[in-house]
Length: 302
Image 1 (cartoon, rainbow, N blue to C red):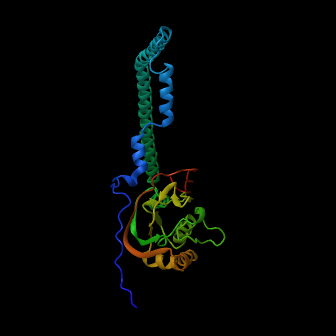
Image 2 (cartoon, helix red, strand yellow):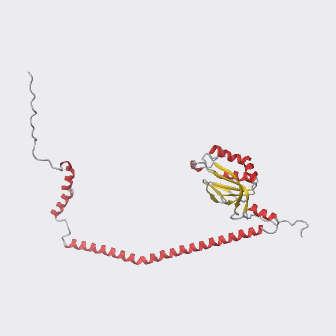
């Protein structure tokens, strides 16, 4: 016999009281309803019961409180008065220090101007001395010493670091192999390039507008190349005055030219060499004379 399905019994809620909207926020409701900690409330009630809450009630306590307030007011007043008295003195001392610094700066500027004037005067006298009667030899000496500007044909050699080059570990220069594994041109590379150009027949050389003389020094300071203590920034433009048809090939075939070729092929150093019909090399910024001797008079000269 098949039983018929019965409808589900109707269940009524256990309580007909609706739930509070903030029932899920019981912790927040408790905090809002009891904003004062129970311990603080109990301590306040205990002090009120003992009569110790609020301001002192006895005359002695009131006098002590008044005396404390008077002392505090006196200390604050004296401190403000002392600060007001010391303010002009401090301002005067500060102004005196500022004046001393300004006077020292003015003296330093005057000394620097005097140094520049004397340096220019010495350089002018040196150039004038080199131009004294001596025929073409005097002009040759002036050119070779870097005392005068040089114009003429030659070659232009541009050397640059490798693309994406870094300073390497600790920025140390190359050690045993003689080459750089960082892709950066070093001072010893520039020394070899310059020496190779001299040996190939260059009559005058400049690097980034810095004229080289027989006393020029090419050194390094970290990763920077210094020429006569002046830092150079890549790319390095090396101008060499000489026979433009012979100077370039002679340099490329020399040992120093092959050295640059190895740097280019193996370490990414970039370089381009091109002949130039007209180059202009400035005079050296300063000439240093270490020793000087009088020229011997030729026999038969009056």
